[in-house]
Amino acid sequence: MVTVERFTPASPEAVWAVLVDGWAYANWVVGTSAIRDVDRGWPEEGARIHHSVGAWPLTIDDTTHSRRCEPLRLLHLRARGWPLGEADVVLELAPEGDGTRVTMSEDASEGPGRFVPAPLRWASIAPRNKESLRRLARLAENRRP
Image 1 (cartoon, rainbow, N blue to C red):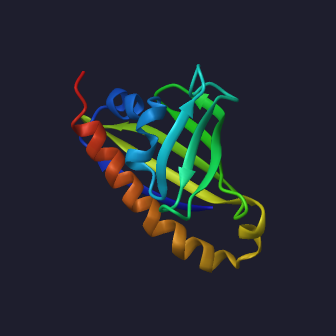
Image 2: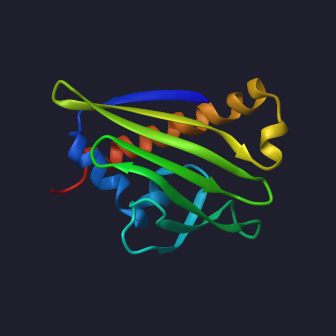
Image 3: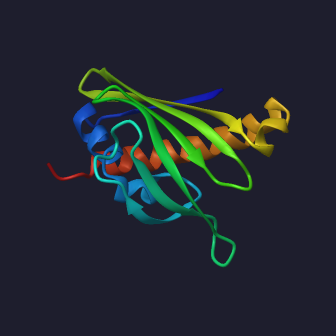
């Protein structure tokens, strides 16, 4: 897996509030263009976000589902984007001073993406996830309690 991290002055509660708002997913996940629906109970294990990936008219409709959820600490997702495949994404929150250290790890788990050599996969994942964490931090920092 490739791992990136970011410190934000936002509290773990503020960061978690963005993560549990399935409708906000497209605002911070790079490549997600729209949210079509969010299962009741998101982000409980098995709940899904129904999203579109890509830019119109070349969009793919698929889902991301929660594999593991530990409130204020960890969210493990399986992001789907077939025919490209699936990826495991793990977000971890750790209090740090008055803020939060957010760690995001990702790698291909199913489909054609697994056959791309790891250094090439990671070279495309790392910058995308750094931008995703930048967006996540901005949303958490500006979220109203």
